[in-house]
Amino acid sequence: MFEVKVKIMLKKGISDPEGANTLKALHLLGFDKVTDAKTIRTFDLLIEGTDKNKVKNDVEKMCQRLLTNPVIHNYEIEIEEK
Image (cartoon, rainbow, N blue to C red; front, top):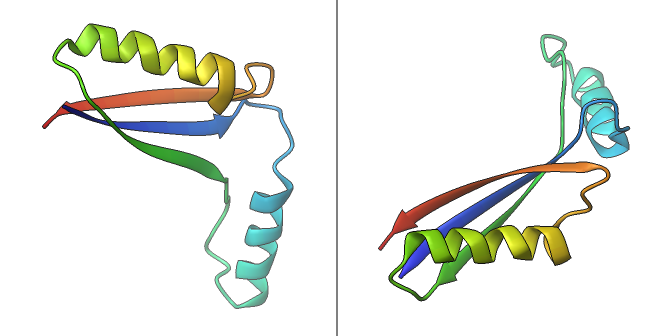
């Protein structure tokens, strides 16, 4: 059994309106020392299996086919055996 965390973020140069609005709101609330805010989406998956490489390959396929848009997203995969 593996616990997998997929962290998805926008590629450099891609507009992040949610992050920009959050930064603006933080400044309006007086948190002027915050210089940047970015949105990151995270998926926590629990996957049955015994082969870590197979699980990683499957998660890569999930990212490429459903979880991300490869044109605008980068992603990181963390796998921990349970």
